[in-house]
Image (cartoon, rainbow, N blue to C red; front, side, top):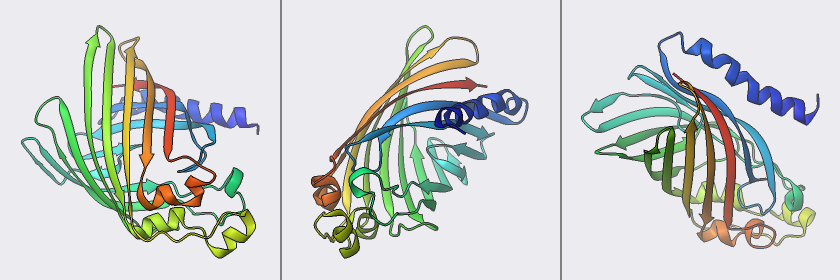
Amino acid sequence: MSRFSLCSLALLTPLLAAPALAQGPWSGSIGAGLMMTPDYLGSNDYTSRAVPDIELNYGDFAYLSWRDGLGINLYQQQNWTISPFLGFHVGRDNEGNISAFEKVDAGMTAGVRVSYQPNMWRYSLKAQTPVTGDVSGYKLSLNANLRQQIAPKWHMGITPSLSYSSSSWTQDMFNVSARDSAYSGLRQYQASSGHLRLGLIGSVTYQFTKHWNLTGVAGATQLTGDAKDSPIVKQVGDATQLLTGVAINYSF
C-alpha cells in the first residue's frame, strides 16, 4: 500500500467513526489532521504526518484525548479537577544524520493532571513517567489554554507551555553512546541534568456547518540545557522546533 493510501486511510477512519460516536454518551470532537513536524525531537529536517485529532468526554467522569491521553476525573470541585491518566511518549525514530543510532522505542506513560479554570483561561500541571518503551525518568508540564470566539463562526486558541524532563529522560533521548558515535561520526555525549522546553501554539478554527469545523495550527518549541547541547541538536539538528498543520473535525 502506498504512503498516500496509508495517509488517506489514517485521515478517513476517525471521520467515518465520528457520527456513530455521537449517538452514544460521548461528547466532544473527532477528526484528523495533516501536520508538518520535525523528524524527531531536536531534528532540523521535517516530515508530514497524518494524525488523529480526538477530544472526547464521557459525561464528567472520563476523557479520551490525542493530547491528554485516557483519564478519569477523580476530583472535581468548583474550578479544580484532578485526573490520573495514561498517556504516550513518542520515543525517537532515527532518520537522516542519526539513522545509524539505536532506536528509542515509544511507549505508554502514567501520570496525574491538576487543572484549574477560573475564567476563560484553563491552567494545568501534568506529571508523568514512562511505564513501557525505552525512556525512563519523569516529565513535568505546565500550560495555559485560551479559546475564544473572535467573529461569527471563527474561534482562536493560544497555548503557552513549559515542560521539564528529568536527567534520565534527557539522557535516553539525547545521549550519544560510543556505538552511536562510531557509526554516525558525532561526538560521544552524556547528559548530566534535565532540560526545559518552552512552547507556544496558536490555532484558528472556522465552523463551516453546525457539526464540522476546520482548524489551522502553528507553533514553536525551544529546547534548552543538556538537550540543546547534545550533538543530536547542536551539530546536526536545531534547538528550535516548529510545527504547522490543518485538521478537520466533527463536533457533537
